Length: 470
Image (cartoon, rainbow, N blue to C red; front, top):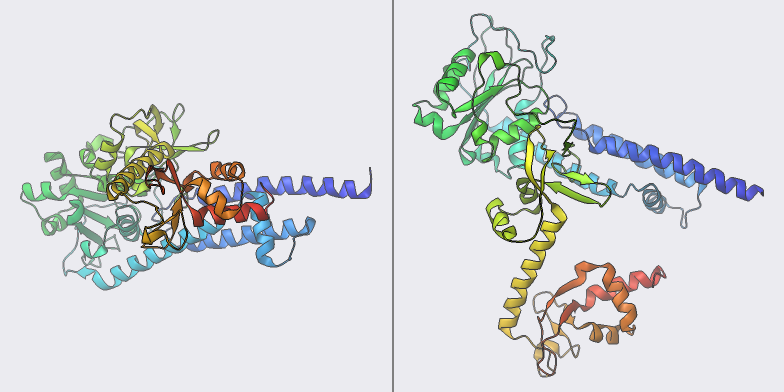
């Protein structure tokens, strides 16, 4: 075996070891959960970790591989491709969006927080901090629950923070608690929250309509002590709930703010103080959805074997930006089989029916295409030579809005000087290029069975040609 062969084997072994290492690091960055304790440093650390990962991966790859061009961008591209780190650029964009969200949160707190001259949630006669999660009392420390609540309102519920009214109180010198509780009144979601940015203080979430039905207001709730609030909640089931931080606080708040979480707004008995007010799933037998804040498939379970993502209808509706009820109507009567009682959600509840995101998305695309097809059929769009919209390229229809040209695969093959067989191979790899069925008529007035966009197919063919892939 020659020296060059030994060097090549060393390089392959070296890169294989680094690949496993870097994929593990990326997974760790993606899986970080957002908490009241880390929201202030979360984005900065994510950016720093991603930057270090990109630099190390590029350096290691370039140390054993020759990269054409040898500029940093080319090296980074090749390294990301080899180590399967292509998610990094998208992650950087996602983090930038989150940074902008937190900027909005900070500005809203600075400009909109109303401070009243009374104590918000006066202390009980002896008010000790409540343990959060592990049962141990900890020294006084602060966190950012208010910021996280407002982040959830924007990120999860797409709410304008102008809809969130913030009110804090004052603390007297003799009070052990140094941070005031703050009311977050959200009429749009029918919720009132009370949070304190000091560890050891429970969070209160109220059904706003129920509060008024039971003759209370946000002001009267502020005047109650903690034990009075809890007693009132127990006397009026469905009016709200309180809980200590514990695990997955961010996910619990999001659930309580949601319409689907409304039935869960029931205060626990005193003996259940330290229990999370959810029916926990048996995590030994159920797979759990992703909780990482940087995970693009947060709230979905990933089937690694088939590359599919499974989640509740709520999660799918959020991901596809579609109304939950509209989504239910869309899949009604369609043979999409759910995964029943095999997944747990972000707070440990069993998801009774989980659906495949990709299958549902494909269904919605087909339905949208069918609707679009019908609209175009009604317009009787044709590509006849006497149609002004086709005079610049014979045999194609030109979209007057964006100037793109649409026609049959035969016409596109003829225009590009590529065989129909070769073009078909290219098209099969890119299902997204398919536009619709019977959307246009040819010169003879007959419907074109399958329609494609000339410009999109040409761009793909050019890329494939450069890669010698067909």
